[in-house]
Amino acid sequence: MNLDNHYDAIVLGAGPAGLTAGIYLSRAKLKTLIVNEGTIGGQMILTHEIANYPGVESISGYQLANIMKKQAKSFGCKIVGNVSIKDTGCSGDIKTITLSDGTVYSSDAIILSPGGRSRTLGVRGEDDYRGKGISYCATCDGDFFTDKEIVVVGGGNSALEEAVSLTKYASRVTIIHQFDHFQAFEHAVEEASNHPKINFVMESAITAFHGGENLESVDIENLRTGETYNFKTDGAFIFIGYLPNTEFLKGKVDLNHRGEIIVGNDMSTNIQGVYAAGDSITKRFRQITTAVADGTVAAMTASIYLNELKVKQKLAITI
Ligand SMILES: Cc1cc2nc3c(=O)[nH]c(=O)nc-3n(C[C@H](O)[C@H](O)[C@H](O)COP(=O)(O)OP(=O)(O)OC[C@H]3O[C@@H](n4cnc5c(N)ncnc54)[C@H](O)[C@@H]3O)c2cc1C
Image 1 (spheres, rainbow, N blue to C red):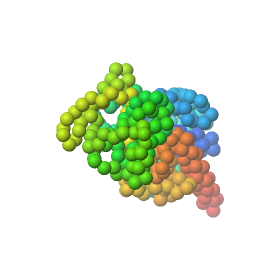
Image 2: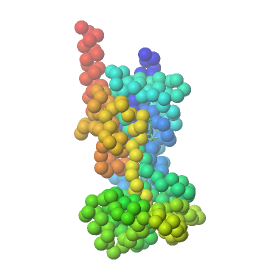
Image 3: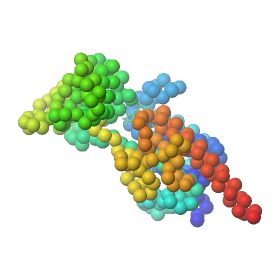
């Protein structure tokens, strides 16, 4: 084992969950490494304004990510970003991370915080207007559409519930759904159907997004007739599902049918020394505050495990 590359804990993923875990672990004097496949900050950096992080009235996601990164580093946490990971070994007493360039990092504990991503429509213009009219988070962005007309895409519980919640802000909400019926609970359908600000475009799908600097309209195809028309809108909220970034963990830790990492209240997984936090775990609400809370709990549980391990190792040496 290369001792330089051996850590007490490795954190996989540098979103708010992973960075918080890094802050707590390194502040507890545990040798900690955060390894991140994308840009440090995770989904936070996709957010131009965060207005619901307590203690900070308004901040860009990029700035908040940089503060968390700086804070973790100030306690001695090492952070490597934009790496390509070839393999993750969770099962043994020693956990390993192998990068594509051959570098191997090892640790006694690992915290998995790879986050997730919203399902996208994958149609023309979606990448161009993401954050400029297209959103995947009503709690995060609803306020920016006060007195504006918006569309909501989807027909499940989250689409209908979020459409109702968006009526607090928007002057009109049009739900676009590909089928002639919804895949949601009766009460959610009823609430949306009876809402005076909500109307429906059924058996239809968005085929393109258009605009200048910001989104201005969408093309909608009627899936029954094949007719396509242009529809003016200030915003589009897409709720067609969520994907945790856990494909690489299949067969390594217990995942549920949605691919979310199954954890206990203390963020432990089914494997000793392996913890998980943030958007990739089994939970209902996915926010920066909840990710930060999970990261805290995971780090504190891991710290207890590591301290007990150190005591056992010392005892084994003295005997
Ligand atoms: C557009 C948008 C706006 C949002 N606005 C807000 C808001 O205003 N307020 C709010 O509270 N929440 C907001 N959210 C939600 C919030 O950003 C997430 O809940 C939060 O970032 C989740 O944190 P996380 O650390 O679990 O995961 P993430 O932020 O997803 O970070 C995970 C990191 O892990 C990396 N990674 C993935 N796989 C691996 C791997 N195998 N190995 C190593 N690294 C890996 C990813 O590249 C990423 O950097 C928003 C989300 C989006 C998409």
